[in-house]
Amino acid sequence: MVKPLIAIAGMTLTLMFASAFSSGETLNQYPLHAAAQQDDVTRIEQLLSSSSKIDARDQSGSTALLVAARANSIGAAKALIDAGADVNAKDHIQDSAYLYSGARGHLEILKMTLAHGADLKSTNRYGGTALIPAAERGHVETVRTLIEAGVAIDHVNNLGWTALLEAIILGDGGKRHQQIVDLLLKAGANPNLADRDGVTPLQHARKRGFGEIEDSLLAFQARQNKKN
Image (cartoon, rainbow, N blue to C red; front, side):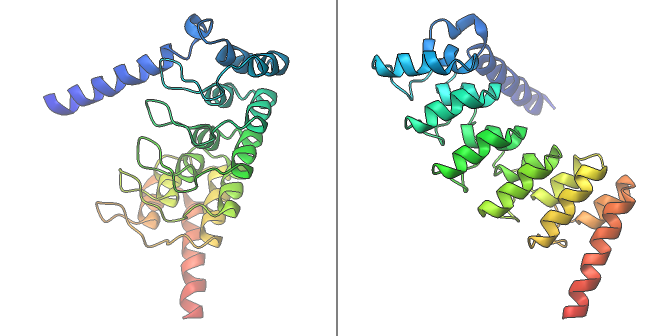
């Protein structure tokens, strides 16, 4: 038990460290980051015209664009992206503006990153694509957008979960997650792809009492069997 607890503690400290250096306490050291946090487009334009480096990192490894993505500062994100900010630049905990906006459902910023070269194969610190946390958190339109963009539907993260599995295992079984399951299935998600313990999405849905999702999975499997 000691080693897992040490690992968890280490990860917690890392996340706290990264968060602290993106907070207001240190933003004054990074004026471009501060302007991004505050969605101050005029200030961003002034700083960029005075030779501020657009992809400069703060002590957490964050660029100004990533700060804008975290704050959902849409105007700032647009100004930075239009000026050439790297939408795939990652911080010390493997977040990028693309991955973060996808995970948090910041749809407008996500669409900007997709239009400016977002790496659909890039993964977060858990080895997941942007689609997996979006599915887990119930961001229906974000999931739809990422599917349409071409993110791999059955990508498996470090936990052994696909977007479909994570939507069921960590979701609440409500309408948003029901819609997401339907979107994933229609996009070609494999309903028989089990987790590392051999438990399928259907079995997880039954175990959690998600009747509507169970019905969707059974109906999908019935249609597939009929086709075959």
